Image (cartoon, rainbow over all chains, first blue to last red; front, top):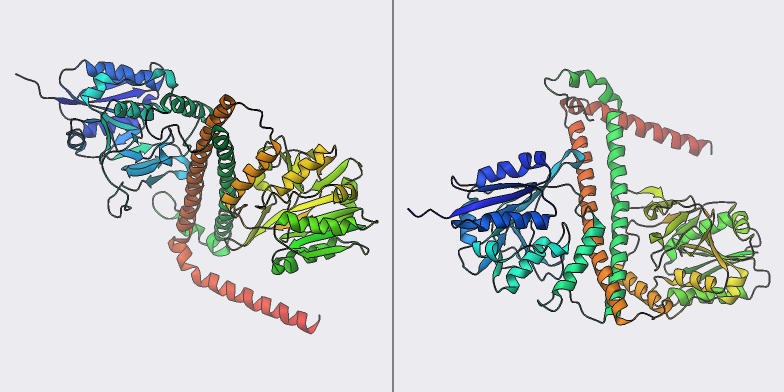
Length: 305
Length: 303
């Protein structure tokens, strides 16, 4: 009897506790009864790990798709496999994801026009919180939100077609961590296939530090620009001579840093207002004389910290 | 004598901030040059320099931005201290060393004690130039910020602001570079002031970018070949996008910090006990207002 095609899940694990807390419950939620799950203990760079996962999956004749998730990505879409199947129904689609952008020139895909972002950023800092992206809920999406073809995806969740799994490899010469997703999508597009977004909702459990190693990120940015310049429109290119580009980019880099300083200044001012108000509240006579009342409450006290 | 000058773009901030500061800091024989701004900031400053240069008795010229308020009655003594070394031609309240562009805060920064007074978020004060992370001791730098610059008599008579830099950003850095190219020194000194500035630091970032490029073109020798410029462009484009990503991440962290404080505030003021004691606080506020009125009345009776 012919076996039904299956959707496999792959994850490279460097921190087992993060995987158990985030990716594993999501995979269990999304997987079908016959889904294969590849839990790979990290064997080097993310590029290398993902290629090992691709080798595992490529060997399966019954592969319908391979879902690659970061260990801190929790799939929450209940009908995930159906949405993934729909996304890959067009045989020209090579890879799908839940966050994608068009007009992308570099690994900083967010500098392009982001057309879909069906995820929530969950952070632990400052008591923790959630930052839902603009298509986490479709209640009030911006006019540019849409599902469809894009230039690139964010690699925290990628669904690869069997063709992609068997044909395209992550380019291990590019570095250890950054830009693997952008480069993979460019390879897929250069081979004549499509990169698409789909409503594959997930929670990305991630710190608020978005670029933890700026120097390696910068190196990857440069390498990938060099690799792709002139091969796909827009990638690695910009108007002007190299000198003009250098001047402009240096000025804009310093402007970005200046804007960040101004933002910090504004935050400091706002924090001062709130801290002063909080201090006035918790130092007030009425707050102090009612402390016994608050202590008598059942369960954990609701004192302001 | 030490002279004071401000190119006045708007009269109101001059009246409110600069003038009282000058009155506080000036000596009886000090000259004042409150000139109306004409055209660019560099043209306005040069008109002031021409006027001051004509004075035989000029010891130094204090150039103030209209939102800078001198806060120190011993300001002139501090200026003389800064210029004790005759090689010093420019002194400022804040500056940097070892930076390649008009972004002096990207270098090793030193700054005098002072405050930045702002009106946003119900108003407040922060340490002046705290945003530039001043960590170095006051002393020799490559350039100082133009909000408060003191020029020696030599500088006033010898160096002019470059009027080809028309966008109003980087003229101060350019002036300091000219001074250093002429073999003189630029220093930060203990020149205390209140900087009445809003929190955005630079109002028009596109103009600032333009100024950045103009000053770079002027000062950097074009000795790179195409390959060198290409490598530099690649690096700068990557750094620019990294800077934007880092800024975005830090913005998220700032929002998270504010959210946490708001949650704590809501938790504190949302308790039953806090709501029950609201009348007490209202009574306390009324009592405070009545006491303030009484104090004012007593002052009117016994001034």
